[in-house]
Length: 388
Image (cartoon, rainbow, N blue to C red; front, side, top):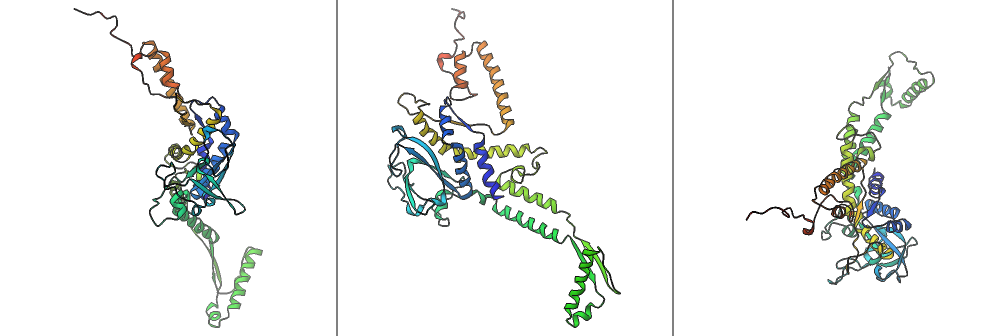
């Protein structure tokens, strides 16, 4: 369950991809060239498992790793290196205390432990920091040092319910082992116990067990009896289903995904669970994935010069995550069809010119909102007769 709780949301956040507004394809091609999707997914998995991850941009032509890097001045990203937060040595790092610094009350340089046990230092300008979606108050003394900075592991979200579910599974396993209990009646049991003749008692019971396995029957003497009682499993499936739903609710992952079983939830098809899950993933994308991804795409854009800034302003990177559900894609197509009919009516009625429709709908990504300048508002009073 912990593995699924870590992997499933991380994979969902990146598997449908994204679009950068104004990209002609060359910027996303650079992202694929450095295997960006795979590294982003790995960073998200470490973040959900341990609380955080550090992605280092391996830049050529920009000096040593421990020096600041200014992407607009040059340098090419050769690849991405992903490190779990446990390999970031917070105890050996200094927090910036200069208010004027962009790293004020944060780390300007990270110390990372290599596989051989040695460490290296990298400047924060070369790093993408992934933090948990569950932060903690760093001033509270009860948290560990790495929890104060990175946040909590996502496994904690449903840990208690997962433990209860595991206890239930163990209980069912014990019931399976004792689903049928044999009852023996021995004629001279009291005498054997009084004489502490347990060996004779064991020999008799062993003989009965051997007879059951060999001839599928038992030879009984005078005064002896053997019966079998079956353990009932009534109510157990319902309890296990309730525990499954509790774990699923804690992790906010549908039962169909977390346990790999048929739909169970708001309705027979599980569409309600799917909608809630997609909403959760969309929220995690904005909180965990979007900030480091925008930083990465901005650095890549400094290489490709794909997206231009307006005037002296630097380029603005706007990212749209693709829809997670086919049902959402169908709804989006229906919205676009409805808007196209409305836009056609605007044009035919002379309310908006075609170039204004294009600007509102497709400039910087599809948008259903309409904002017009005063120059485009027609003068409905022009040519009208006036009375003196």
